Image 1: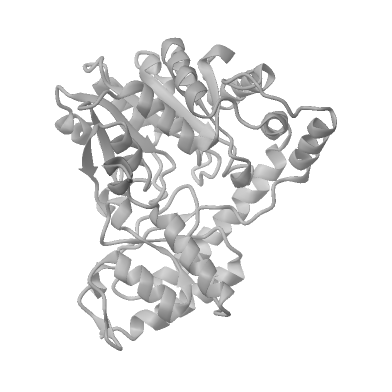
Image 2: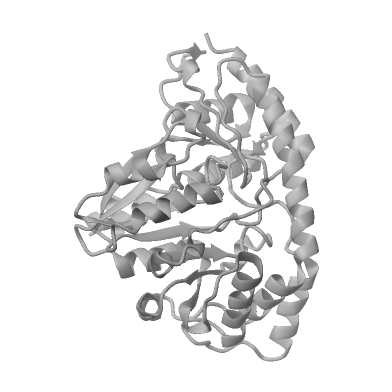
Length: 395
């Protein structure tokens, strides 16, 4: 007998579309997959060599739940060097990816009936994770005209007596939008009036930032103790399969997160953690090279999308996603396939254009679809030609 908890849980839309694309490709179809949020670069060699060395040195046993002290010290050094933030190692918990970091924070902060505000569009897993914590989810819709950013005024208008947390990402998945310092300063100043409200700041795309300056809301002293900074290794260092994330927060909450993780997974893979130190300390050049490649790819995909009539675009300032509004095509058909939702459009593009993408439904933006540009420039150009041709067939 399956619990209602699982029956009511949505499958990840990104993983579902990626699986469909893989299955079609395995059947012989020429699929270009732009669905998964995964860098196409290999993990830098220096990181892999560090993992091999750690294995050879016998780092194969259980570790502390919160992670190796040396790794937590390296994370603290990174936060100081790159972000100007002071944390001690006992305020850091290393997790199995940023997704577990978010889950740990929600399970440690939210009681059943507590409210969490989520500016929309948002990453597909925020809502299901909060639902597992039995929280009340309040979506805070933003618009393309605002570059999908939630202002302090908009957030405050949605705060209630039950509000316990706000969660957002910057750079944002799926929109690529980035909160600048003045916007975060206004939000922080507003939150000074609400001492029971915490901020879950998802900064996993920190380095993939075309504004060249990442800003964290944890920089504002009056609310720093109410910030859960969430980050990891997957995107910047192309280490998605290594499953390494972390939280940085106040000591009491860090201890609660460690306690929860201790009953769910315990500490993460031992030798991965050793390699993580190398990633943080010795890969600045490799990260910069990857980001420059993403910057060029962004221009390629935006150029291709601008050539398609009837769509609206924001300007992604970070991450590696384009999130066009394709709602002008709703109600149109081709060979009996009628487009009524963004999921319909994603399936249509997969079947007709042979390009994998993700509908905006589970991102709380049904008018949009998400393309990842974590692919070669050649693949992106070809994909945009196919998408344009497919949309031209709709009548």
